[in-house]
Image 1 (cartoon, rainbow, N blue to C red):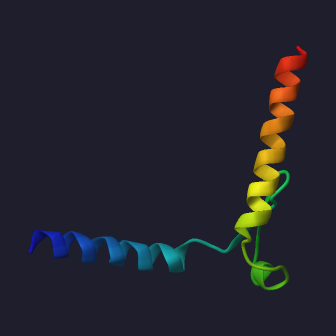
Image 2 (image 1 turned 180 degrees about the horizontal axis):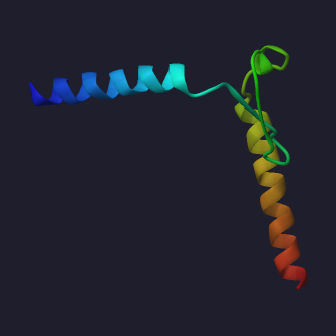
Length: 69
């Protein structure tokens, strides 16, 4: 019974946060965050493949910079 109580309480908190936190768009490359009404309607949704490509590129650049120092 306690397990279901925790589950429903967590779901209720999630619903409240969904309505309170504004939409946010984050740049894959530089990490800049943009907010505003309808900001996510003008761009495509999150693409894990694109995110991973930029994350790996940043990691390689960081390794090259530390190896060159």
